[in-house]
Image (tube, rainbow, N blue to C red):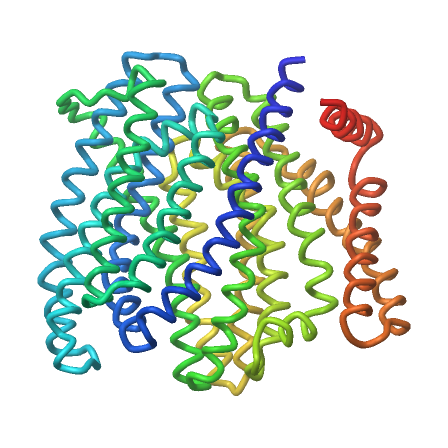
Length: 507
């Protein structure tokens, strides 16, 4: 009964996050259009380049943010309020120190880049320097929000997470309209207002946490052991974060070296579309991750392992039901979205979707490994394998392969990493790797094989244009849903799903 309640909580939280994502996606697309029109191409480019210099420091912060989230969620699972309060205060102290380090490093590095390396009209250099200051301020404020955001997700208060996220999105839209009607330097005003938005959102997180969570009250704490543990965890996590950045951005650089900027544009379009689709799985895992970590901390290993296997399947299902219609209608969708579709875009889109499906199986395994806190061996092996993306892609491109090979390599290495994770987690948490292969990997393979023939057959009879696309997409979704229900799910899972849907309709 308790497991069913936890499952319902995951479902409700996932729906909250889906609503948040859908609204923010619409608001974000419209906001970017308004901002581009208000700033113009040159100033918009300056803002993004300068912001990108600051964003490079997310490699450092990303590893530490994972450490903060893990420790807060872990202590909540153990139920020790005194230690939880100490972890929260220590996390805030660490973020303060990190913020100072980023300011000391990024400020001179950014100014040097603007003055010496950036291709920019000399008249706009003072504005670019101001953008750097405000971008750094926004970055530092965001760093200070991490312990509050980790507390909200650890408590599984996704309604608050969704609500504050919506506040953020609508404030950004308001900023876009403000600069559209401003007569001052719009680039400087935009960067200042965006920093103000970040500050308002940070205050909203802080106010909610102080009101609802007793542990979220900062007290100066200097626990050497805890600080050393958190930095050690972040240090090993740094390998994985760096490997992922090099795989994604390094692959983009290799494509530029061997194929030129036009192919980079095709890859960029594919990455943007894939990121939107992958958001559905990200939201689902945001709802699931706290329960994996808390069940490990509380010693409920049975539920944790069950949740890892079930959420791996569900992550794949959620992505598959969205990805299948895109895979079968890639060309038409791209022609609707873009005026001119760069060469290679269709292949990149399809390969990135397959890569996302492959990675979706591993997301819960990553969370389970992080929950143990002992990630030295895990990150050395898995991070090392991910780092192979760059040299292997380079060798393939040097041998004359098409630029799409960078994603093909990522797909193959993703599956190798999945196998490595299964072997490692057998020792780390007692995961039955054979049961995972049978119950998850073979399961989703069978679902995919069962879902594809009907859209493939129907495709040859579809008319051109929107009517054909609509019919094809409907057949893809129906075929995927039926395959998931009757090939992927057990009878009990189908009944549970139907009952939950019926309850929602009754309410």
